[in-house]
Image 1 (tube, rainbow, N blue to C red):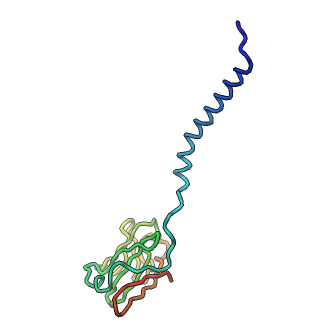
Image 2 (image 1 turned 90 degrees about the horizontal axis):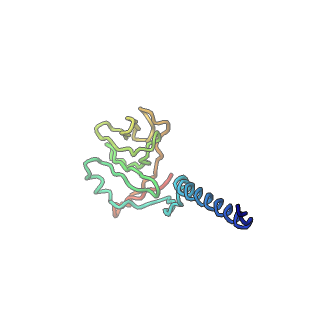
Image 3 (image 1 turned 90 degrees about the vertical axis):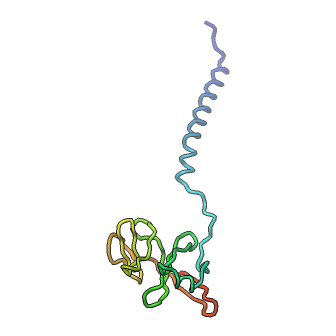
Length: 150
């Protein structure tokens, strides 16, 4: 039997090791990209101007609207006493989006029947914490609504 040159054997070993490392990289790189999310391109905000005015909110049948507040959702509500209040629209139980139920007079989460009063306090169901409250400022002359973190 002819003897194989040692340099050829070393080259074959390096090729096999390199191929195995490339295979592992092709398996684990997509997993890494999936687990580690990319950096968000949206900035944190402390105040926004809503895209609708007070008169539009007052004439709305539901007396509430969902709005985007930076990276999260918010809900603005006109109460029976004509007070305008804003909260985070993310339920503190499982991050579902809440809605205003005028018939119940509460903020309601449909995921697990969680209820919040109009001060954002959890009053029924599984939510462990109250909703985050936002400050509302209304320009008297124009009716523009500004919402900011408290």
